[in-house]
Length: 166
Image (cartoon, rainbow, N blue to C red; front, top):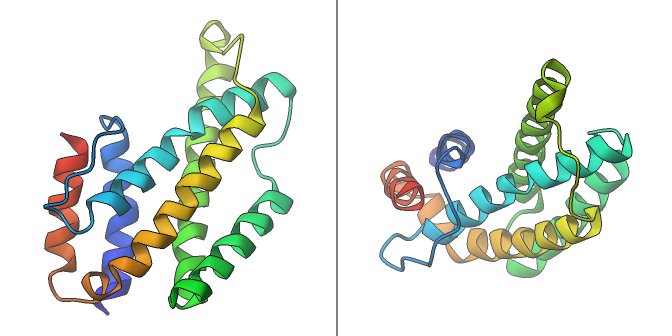
């Protein structure tokens, strides 16, 4: 129960933090800091990915890439002793949030073409960053498994969110 609540709250917390969060140095005082920070950084990749897709005319959704990511994180979860279905659910939520940001950017650029990007980083560079962050997130889920399943998870998550946002 705590884990599901914490997972859902984590997605909402990271989306809220995304508006103001910049990658920050680790704060070892908050047990979920590294996980929330990595999730926020992963969401921040939505902007360069959206710009790349906008300029290339590519679709926002990429089922082949999603399958690749979910297969990789599931494998890493299994190696780390974390249930694959838990990690798959976390990353499905993360991917959905990233796609939602991309849809939002596309809508804004369609509404006001003057704000649309004229350059973008190579999509492969963004994907490499995403893969690195995915690995970090799976490692943190495994490391913080007891915290994610504790009654203190909601409080620890709020504390981590506050630090990442600051």
